[in-house]
Amino acid sequence: CHEQNETAIVDLGGLSPLVTFMTSPDPNTQLEAVAALANLARNQANQQKIVEHGALGPMVHAMKSGEEEMIRQAARCLANVSLNPENQKHILNVGIISALVAALRHKDEEVRRLAAMAAANIAVYEGNQVQMVTDGVLAPVDD
Image 1 (cartoon, rainbow, N blue to C red):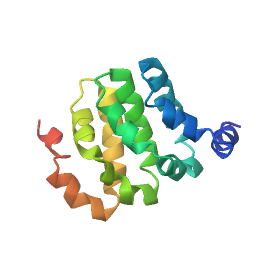
Image 2 (image 1 turned 30 degrees about the vertical axis):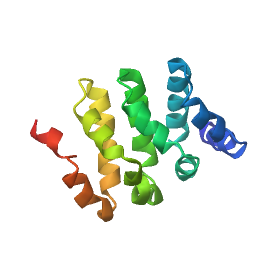
Image 3 (image 1 turned 90 degrees about the vertical axis):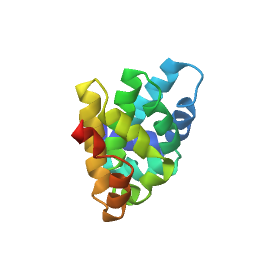
């Protein structure tokens, strides 16, 4: 039932308002939008649509927010959307690496775990691997 609801929300136009809410001046609205997108991104059918609706740019901003729960939810969404092979090819174009490296160093274990999942998913696409290493994704492993 959840999967059908997640697909229906997207099919009925729910992504555009959520992406807009990610840039709301109200941090609580931003957080709820990021968390909703992370939930919708669990559904494989939604992953590429979320990226196509422009969620990655605001997701990078959310990961750099300094707010632990916002970072956690953004990392969860990124981990989910990066499962999609098409998204893996383009995900580095939005400047995600610096936010990912910061999340890999975060004090919260769950944030680090989700960021590591996202990094692992993104690295599945061979074309991303050199850039990821060059941009420091492995540096937190040395810390």
